[in-house]
Length: 326
Image 1: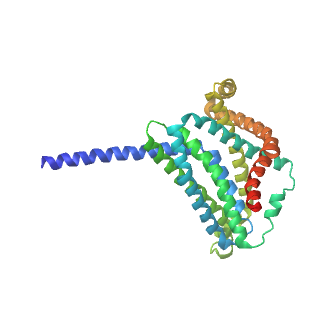
Image 2: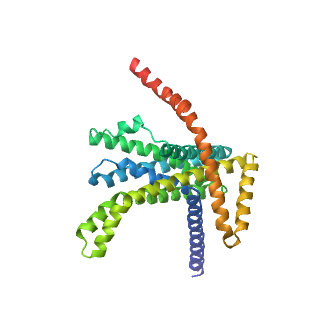
Image 3: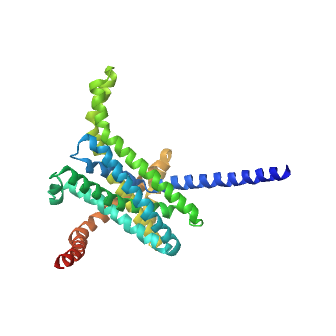
């Protein structure tokens, strides 16, 4: 009997440790996911554009295909790569974070630039030529998964940097939870967004109550504005998060003066409004981080479009030309 009681005590102790580990994983995943908020919002804001031009019956299957590609990106490629970095090259995480932050700044600044100075884009115009729906779907899904890979890499790198590195199993489990949770949140949200107008139309046409029909008409009218707001919030979040990542990375490299300057300005603004000191301080810091991100992104636009992009195109063409010559 005493042996059985001892065994039950051991089982209870193991269960407590397991429960504590699960709590740790969930807690760390929540913190890491919050750090990646800017990239997550942009991921949700970017994806609906890939569904433009398709029949309503194909929208959810396309979202599901992109979501499956996203989870493969995160679990089969980015998670192992992140763990290898954590084990063999932890020094590389900060530079990679800064590179990803600079990319977010570039993406956000490019959206702002195109909004202020709209012009034709031959790639966009070519994409509007629908052609074969099947071919277009394959092209759009492939493009969405490639875009998702870049954003997912940023999300996973941010999450990895926010997780304590003293327990590799905790790191791996937390990254897996972040990967699954963010994918479900992003593409579940995208599915709701793309079908909201259909649901609103159904409510407006078939609702038994006038309130239901009015709500349906409100959803149909409001979705275009909501998508614009979502895109705007996503762009602002990209600039804020990208700028803060680069500034934090500069501090890790010993360049602390700029981050300290922003902190001092935010603290002074917070002290001036003592009734909401914490809120004002956060808003000022986020705004200054975002302005820095916008400035950095605008500086990167000519470098990326005139130097980096042509160079990458040249590198991609060389294997194709070699294959054709054979």
